[in-house]
Image 1 (cartoon, rainbow, N blue to C red):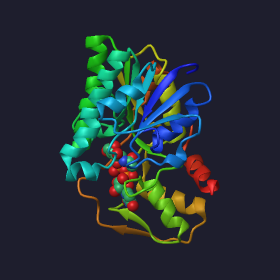
Image 2 (image 1 turned 60 degrees about the vertical axis):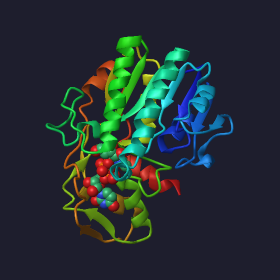
Image 3 (image 1 turned 180 degrees about the vertical axis):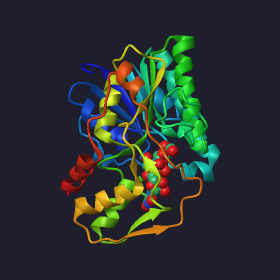
Image 4 (image 1 turned 135 degrees about the horizontal axis):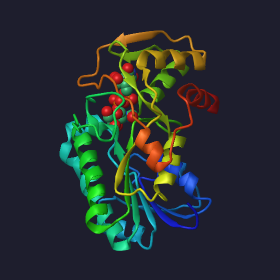
Length: 301
Ligand code: UD2
């Protein structure tokens, strides 16, 4: 998109900051972030930063004034944290999301919401399509599902152009911290020549999608006519955690051993996106394969 005024909530976070980088050259970009997990160092100088909680109506109103598009990426991303404190994550992931939709209604702005494969829980069939039954297994998943449904409803009831993107396992530069994904954990272990720790037998699988593809999906969502819909954002390829561990070890040339420890309680066994609808209606397909994505991560530093 070009020549637009846009707001990225959670714009200092992992996915948000990459999106801001892509938007800044051709748009007026605002970021609303409370820096609870986001990193100010990831923000380009050209973005206007409003420091605040997305659930604070005053901060949100200021940030959203006159915008054409809101990319809503502010969230409590830790599933564990949502289990430990469901009401706190509900406040950020659902209540604040609803506030964003309301603010968009005021401004007549398009909204792209960050939804999640967590809405499916243990998928009944693979690959999982958008019409599959939703059955979240965590407060995080329930909150993302409700937000995803609200986005659809706002399109239906108020004619607001909304799009929900159901991210599968996103990875890439800047993913770090205690709740980051398995790829960043394995890379860190491999670089330190420490054991790479597989939880369980390693035969569980995931659909790993590079953050640059997720950014491209957001840019498509900002212009698509096919609004009021949810789209799977994945590659359509599944990789086992065992294969991942070996790929990371090979790519880093590490001497790490690969060890197994107890499986994660409630872990999803297999997760993979059916990308048919996304390709057909959103006009988006992932480009970065897992091996080249990992190689580029290794080459970065
Ligand atoms: C992803 C999302 C989460 C939610 C969920 C929905 C990430 C980071 N998280 O959780 O937000 O949407 O999907 O189902 O994308 N593992 C190891 N060793 C480690 C770390 C992880 O073996 O050191 C395994 C883990 O047990 C799991 C797999 O790797 O089987 C992926 O774990 P994850 O935490 O990266 O992501 P996931 O799929 O639990």
